Image (cartoon, rainbow, N blue to C red):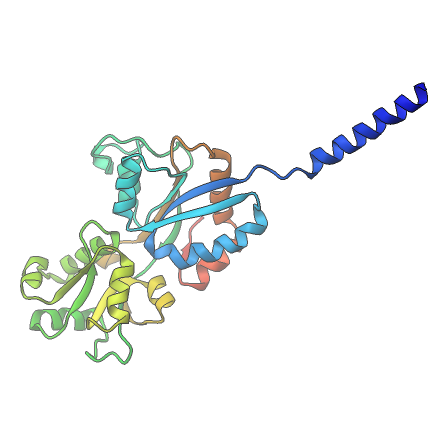
Length: 272
């Protein structure tokens, strides 16, 4: 009888251990707020990430960095933020003082998780066939001043729009005067600007090189650092996340070689 009970206990322990080992890790939904210009890229990376972290489901919210910053500030659920410009990240980062861009005293960036992930380029893209015959930013300047072309650009609260304003300043162009002359068309994010070019609703558009690549558009010129500065994409974990470990792991994955291959394939330059 003792032997019977001993065998029974061993059997229970074996099956109990098997049951524990067969349990899946609890699924985690990681919410990533990312600049609209990263839409195709991050969706491609998400497919690869399933193999690296099968227990994590990535949920993306793509929009202009300014809109995403406002949503985070207003309490939207967000675990990771990737901005198309340091400006919007600085506005949320307590490590930045007023002179560094944090004019509202916000504190949403988790200390020591912020880093510069990528660099992009500001591109002058044209519709198929380039009907206006635009070949450079110098041509753009001449066409805008002559009133012979229509340019699509981002709104002033959108990073790609802010880079465009810097290009205007470099060439001595008055945005208000150009808007009054009816030679500017605006978009609330870079995807809207890209669509206007793709649909040939405008003569050209100032977008990111990666968006031009994804949309199959021709890039006739690329802005230099002197014209608009570097286009840096910072990334960070957002304070208050309930998935800090998973958020940090995802950002580490984005620094790795597998993600770098995807970034490079569409025109991004990995910086990490």
